[in-house]
Image (tube, rainbow, N blue to C red; front, top):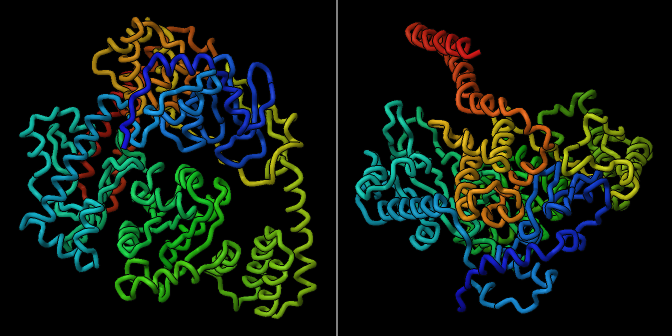
Length: 638
């Protein structure tokens, strides 16, 4: 196998500077000029009003609805699910570079990794190996290993998924401490809990560990299952988000499943990690699970680039059915996949079924014991209703007709209508009469790309800024696709708004950069912004410590999708927002003091309320003293 050679930086820069991002995006998006920018319907989600904007001068793109953004290379990486070298190779012909060395896109592509990410990956890899060793090779792990064997897992599967055991007594911390690993790196890893005195202690103790890996196979987080019968502890404990782990973007087992998913063009979505592992052991190698039951838009978009079909196999309890409903809605709104719902017999989960039946029975269930989204929704609408009550029965029928109205095939519509009519003794003509106006509404929505409420957006709803302008709603209302609810624009907290403004100011103004970096003990509250500042420091040092004016070039340097999307938003602020230098101190004060203090006050209020409910007078008194001190501190700084 040929080992990939890193593409020289000067060649990447040359290709980027010679290509026009509009030429690369146009085959995917129909763009129309509006002011200084071009707008189109975002290719990463379904929408009626174009919110995808391309700035030709700066050679970047940004979607105001889903938040995607970046430069020409990140667009290809997102749209084609490509690696960075593959994206450069695809863009190269647009720049007149037709003889790119094949070694740059060999089967083992290299990537540029910032020092913190590299160090954290190494830390998690070592932690995974230690936990796995403790599980399979030590007496301390016998109970955990027996538990996994009793759940039907063989040693080969345990090794493949690098399952582990976390004992008590801070074994992981002591291991890294003996190796002299930096305290701040351990602190940032989220592998440990920090006590009030600053000491670090293992986050996971006496738990079986499921290793969560990213799509490239790097361990990035853990989920720990309690082994004791102590119900005061959570049954499952999961890693919090970290510089490596964003739970809304990751899918359990995608690293092992992606080959089978691409080959079969189909993915099976399970609810639990054990379901995925048991299915994998049985030969179903295209299964994944979200981080918990709540599937996200980002996860659907990742799967949509690999698969044409998705089978959802969640638990049969109420929580699992609600999760199935949410998943179906997300797939319909954000993906191109055809969805089916899998029903495991006897209300079992896949793991339980596999322990009671052979592999062929399970494969038969996945293939034949399914229903389409319409049938599922008709059944789902029954939940919590007393259909012997006439009022509830009529409400149910009305809701079902709304679902049937979305079916485009007349024969299927009539089949569902007959089923409802026979069950509730309602004539087919009556049901068709009630369905007719709903069908007209659906037809009107398909032919009219206005928003679902059919109202023209207010001026305040339009997105406007200095570089991307306002989305040209009027020019597009006759050319958008069939209606699927567009995603709500991502909302961010006041703290993150301040972080974005301050970081944008720092990148373009040397004086502000120096003012912030020379402020003692200042750090951004959110890890992505701190990471960008660290990367910007390295980028500046390589470019004469000058302001970062070439945002597309800086995006090449960063090469992390979640960070380039933030950078794309930083470049949208109007220049007049960066004129009053006194606001820099206000941003610093708000991020480093005011916001954390406000959070502490709110937390103390909640704790006092909980202590009152438990009639714990001593704790109420202690918390009240802290609460009053925090209020006095807040008043002092006003």
